[in-house]
Image (cartoon, rainbow, N blue to C red; front, side, top):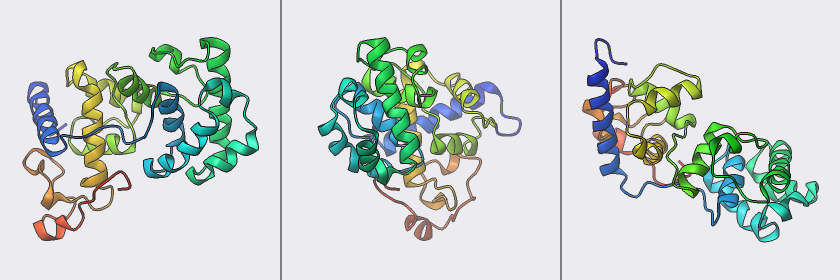
Length: 234
């Protein structure tokens, strides 16, 4: 929180930032390709510590061969590992997606449940993954605290917490529940495109007047403009 900033002032500033992000990224959305809750669940697990672009590169092959939980639960481990290897940590990820597919078959009739309390019981599924699936496949509002989101909300002075669950709770208190999913997309897009970890493009940022961390990156507009990236690869 900004020094001497009241809770009311923080809430108002946070919501102004959200409106600016909405104007800057009107087409913000989940950048993982999916056609069903199952596909989004698997893709989100695979997205850990890699890019959405890399995940989108392997999931067409994976889902063509194993289109649902029943098929994936019976897959040969070696075959799955070969397909998802480009995403990194492929052995652990294979263990997770095979295990969660088996759990879906055994406990949920092969269908992805639409409740947080059920999703987080699946192997490899935490609150972040569950909120991605709920918000984008079921229309249930949720805050996705990934690396970008956590970094930015601390830069914005919205929270000083580092624990994802505490971050989720504090940020959720600043916004109407109906905004949670799109807020997550907008913040993540901003983190990928402008507010980078090492050299944020401060001089090309629409939030400059609202951000207490303005100046952490180059403030010269021409220099900053060169740091702006496009697309999920960023």
